[in-house]
Image 1: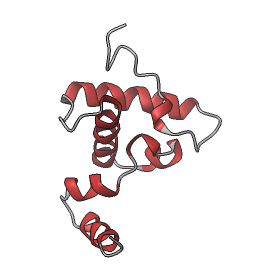
Image 2: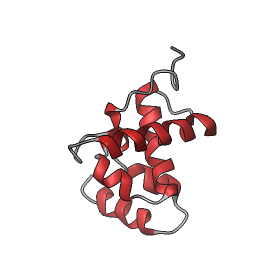
Image 3: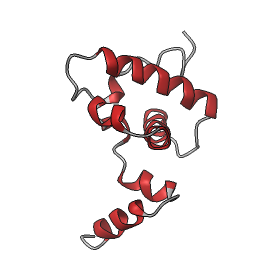
Length: 99
């Protein structure tokens, strides 16, 4: 198991390895400070993983769902007084489940 961590990290450093990035990505546990600093592609990976965690599925969420969630999370993170707030605390009501 200990050998798997360096391998996952090494794979994450390779360009274009979304699946490798997703393995080491924290998903919903990503703090706002880290999320805001990510480039747009890393934000997409983070949010896809977060949505899969929330819905307890491995089915990739629709692109428009990911886009809407990114906007909601960015708004929440930019308004947060605590930069360590995890993105899973964003209110995604209406994005995942209709109000």
